[in-house]
Length: 282
Ligand code: PLP
View 1 (tube, rainbow, N blue to C red):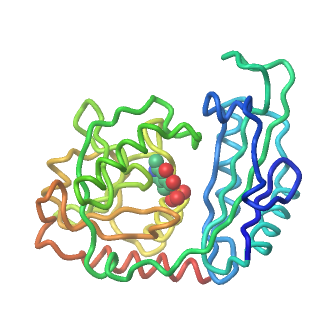
View 2 (cartoon, rainbow, N blue to C red):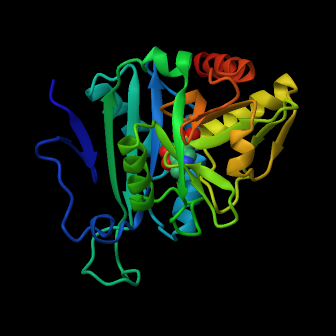
């Protein structure tokens, strides 16, 4: 079955789907995106993804994009046309097409692109054995709370992780505090069982998985705080893990090659992962 994309009002085969060379997304990375998981045919946490999308658009002052109701129809249609039961749907909105000039064009219509793809079930080893992260300087800009398609800092960081044989890179700000992973949020559990993640300010993306897990943590009554933690605190932690739409809750068992505690997934991490997976099938 050939893959089908939605591009600015039409459904096209991937081989024929294209955007204009003066699309501001292509020239300036002037746009936003979302990735929503599809599990057993269901869009997971669609509502908070759309809330975040609207916030990102508002922060970039991109107006006039497809409203939620028609957008939801498009998301479902792309999922259906690609036969996706388990996978992801990708949605991108750019400011539109205009002669190249940094300032906003006087007239431009936002361009929406939606694609979907199936994914194989995640390798169970990742959750059973945990993964390693490296730490790298956070070289990104100061509005990482906006989910823009401008991802070069994240791209370079992920590549560095891959070349180091690690799953993810945790980025570190100038004060020595971990911000987040290149495509995931970062968490630790301290020696006294306090679950810690950085507060959702400008330095990180407020992950939808992060938001769902915080609700679970409150519901289950675990000790929790939102505050920055240092690389040293992470290395001395009892447990560590990361969250995202595509990696759920995944244990981190090594940081810069050093085992976290005894180097196996933590018990609380495993419990939170199970609770999160239960939330998905609700
Ligand atoms: N942080 C960054 C930089 C990301 O790119 C992502 C996801 O793409 C996340 C965190 C996790 O966000 P979510 O849980 O909404 O997938």
